[in-house]
Length: 104
Image (cartoon, rainbow, N blue to C red; front, side, top):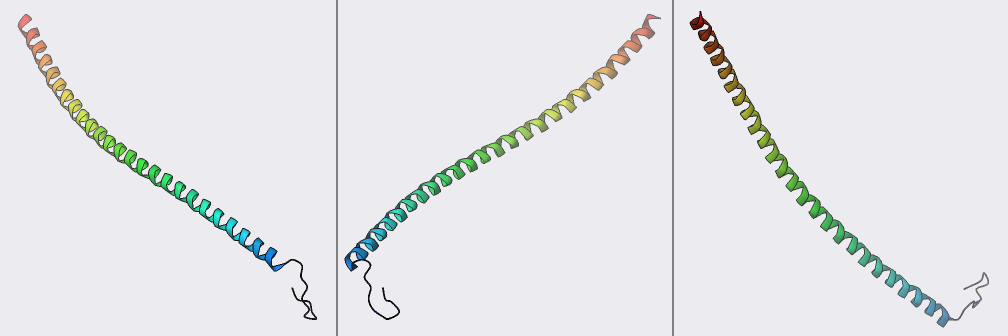
């Protein structure tokens, strides 16, 4: 370090300063390396979870489509059954009416 009079004041030896810098650099490299591996692990996990979620979503969409088709088919069956019931009710009413006429 230099003072205002430009005289050199040594607060530590150059070797100690270099050693401190190299140690700090090494620690920073280790930390960077660890953070890289942690972020890579997190990214890989997120990618796998995203793929699983997409697969589940596709399955759910297929199930929904199947359920919708089944519901439409069931509605059509109900409509056919209701129509057949109406025909049967009408036929029953006609037969009952004829039976009354014949029993008179």
